[in-house]
Image 1 (cartoon, rainbow, N blue to C red):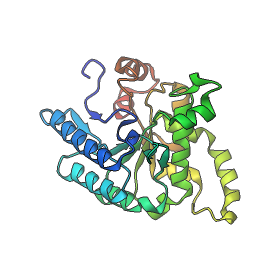
Image 2 (image 1 turned 135 degrees about the horizontal axis):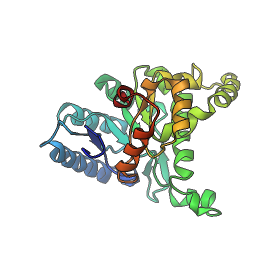
Image 3 (image 1 turned 90 degrees about the vertical axis):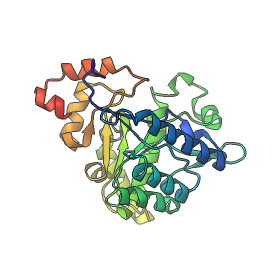
Length: 268
């Protein structure tokens, strides 16, 4: 961290984490143990390390309670969810968090005033077979991560989560999983869905200026940073590396190369 100019690091459970555990009671127990371990790991150096809670998302009320425990008792900064929650006897039931069933969880995040980071994960075998068997090299970071998670994030917007919880803060990595680069088309085409009963009350792009933050995790493209800064503002973009999947030295070298003042680099 010292070598790469990082003062503070937030630890989280690697993908797919708890979201791959289909048994609800097992998922809840493993999440609790993981969070207790995180608290133990950072306890001797809280000036340099913090943590995001790992949560089972089988039951929104239980997830809300565990988030409260992690924030109020363990001092965590929020939660990180690895996309959808697997469930069911065959591990093929997928829970997304954009229905009213999850309102109690989002309400807790707002009450605690902490962010929820949505991170990609590997797909279930049925999706691999249907969508990626023709080109398996697209799985993961090259394509599948952005495709799957961007749909989940768009679902939060279109199903009215941010309208019901205007104080909610969500963080999306990899420069927003490509969504900000397509704002015009998304806004235009979603405007045609209003008469069909879509719950979203504002333009899709609006939520990225009030509720959604993006990070640079594993996407060190200077021209894209300039473009996203121009449409979102610098305060909506957070520096992040995605270690250990991307090396911290690579992120540090990119920041050093940016045509910014030293103060702007420190603010970034």
